Amino acid sequence: MNFFRRQLPLLITLVTGLVFAAQYYVPHPASEEMLTNVTKWLQIIGGFALVLGVTSLFHIHAVKIRRREPGWGYSFVLYAGMLGTIVIGLWHNGKEVVNGTMTAFGWIYNFMMVPLQGTMFAILAFFIASAAYRSFRARSREAAVLLVAAVIVMMGRVPLGEYLVPLSGDLTQWILNVLNASVRRAILIGISLGAVALSLKIIFGIERAYLGGGKE
Amino acid sequence: MTFAERMLKIDRRIIFLVIGLCTLIPLLYPVGLAIKISPEVHGVYDYIESLPEGSVFLLSLDFDPASKPELYPQAVSLLRHAFKKNLRVIGMTLWLPGTGMANEVITRVADEAGKVSGKDYVFLGWSPGGGSVIINMGQDLYKAFPTDYNNQPTKDLMVLKDVKTLRDVAYVVSLAAGTSGIETWYVFGKDKYKFELGGGCTGVIAPGLYPLLRSGQINGLIGGLRGAAEYEVLIDQKGRAVAGMDAQSATHLAIIVLVILCNIFYFMLRKSQGRTGQQPG
Image 1: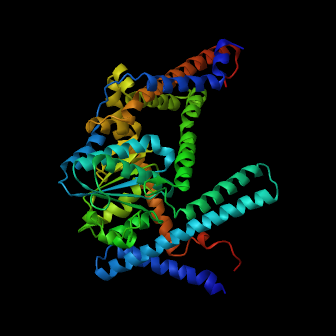
Image 2 (image 1 turned 135 degrees about the horizontal axis):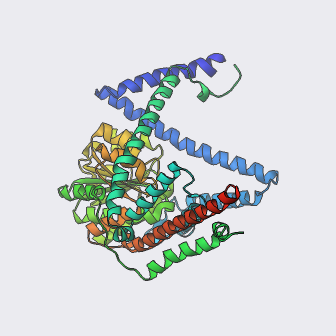
Image 3 (image 1 turned 180 degrees about the vertical axis):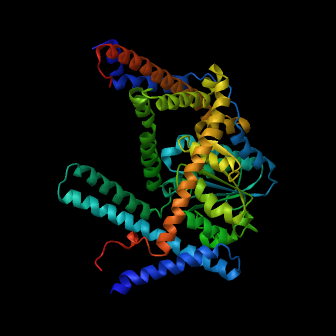
């Protein structure tokens, strides 16, 4: 059993990892055909991941409702919303509009999901303003630098700021293009090198956490 | 309790009210301050402007309704520009919750421009996989999307004539609110299939994409509502983004004033507590 649980997945990871790392550099039609087919598998697996996610969500909230955990009412709302949307969505074949007429599924999407998500995002502005007032203080030299940079960028990104302080627009461009880009690039290079190292560790079986913690 | 202490512990509902008014009043009484065009937005505009009629333009609307205020106006402006230039438009999304909205914006702007689905434009919809969808489209577009959003076989569509893979697409623009988005299109798409790539994104993630811009990995970037407003000015069709800039100006200024005030009160408090040997909060 150990072969199926450990050796076989490690072997599959090693072979596919090496083959598809090499595939990038081999433009032969056979190699391209192999990539086409495998990415199709990936899309299918992606579809299953969606089913898995929905199943897991149903399971977690079913447990909450059964045990009457604090806030179980919200889980019930989630169940009602999700099941209702799935049933109506399937009924209308996933279409929001049929022959120019909005379906019930389209109504749920346009008049419930769109405004609800928009509202959630919009209230962030209020909380950011409140948090900025409470915590954006020049407690140290570093915090003062951050504060000045933030004020300049906030001024330079809006017409009123550029109107009041004409230099703020150019200063903002400089901060974004030079200071920000160089620091972000350094972070990106670090992350990428880390990703390469982790990929090599997974391919060569050094990192095995993805196999799960089952008994040997 | 000193005045500075009282001001630092001000009821947050007052701040909410200030921000609410700063958003509402400019929307009701717009000022219409001049909007300066940045080179990043010009990059996208100039490239679309340089494309010959009939070129294939792919717009990937990689966002959900939460980012609608910033990215929807960008999508409208880009589509108006593309249809005005008589480009063949392919629409799609890598974000499942954005599918209905993406279909709506493409259909609405196409109707406005008198364009016909299947002939002048197509909306492919969503397919699972993120990066693997892009690779699949780069290998064989018809395998990735055998039918469009309206269940029409993609092979029969006039708009996709001579378009077999992403290599046949002249320009791709991803309007992204996160991952999958512009970086995904670069890593899995442009790097291998050699099309030109531009981007549009929410204001929050824009600074993170500047390294891609500076290195030429993307040829332009429309950042947030400001970027959308700049694009509206460029195509001379002012819309929601330009209208929203006054509100954004006022709220930015309000936050700057609040931050300055909070620091004044903080230093006042530090000074007074320094005298008594206490530490300010």
